[in-house]
Amino acid sequence: MPVDPHRDYTRQEQLALDLTELFTNGLRDEQGQLPLALQGIGSAAMALQTEEAGVPLPMFNRMLTTANEISLTRAKAMPEELVEELEKRGFPQIARIVRAGIDACRDEDDYRNLVHWLIQVRNLIVFRAQASRVH
Image 1 (cartoon, rainbow, N blue to C red):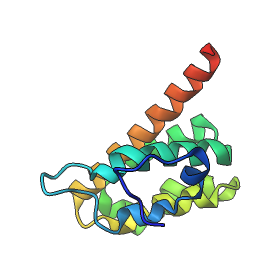
Image 2: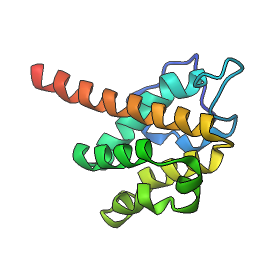
Image 3: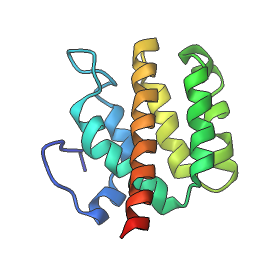
Image 4: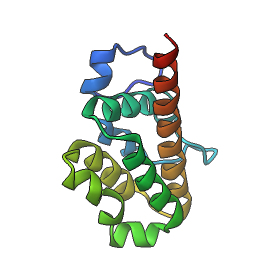
């Protein structure tokens, strides 16, 4: 199902979203910012899918650190630098989303937006974990 940034999604719907579709319209809007679908439901659904898959936060952090340190050229040439651990440890669906994001990048600005999106996802994962400990 296409992602509608103006709609509320249930937990089950977020888990069922094909997040690779988020990248079909690119990683920047007319102002060069993350598209609304990526900022909102895309970030929330990716965090939820990552948690549901059981990806350990330190593993996600390592992937994010690497993504932040390398260029788009390197990420396109060697995407396994970002997703190899996810794939080897049994999280291919999360690796597939990251690969789709890399593939959708047209230039370094797109790639920086992808990294920014992954940072948002990580922050949501941390926030949700802290909130669940409080309640």
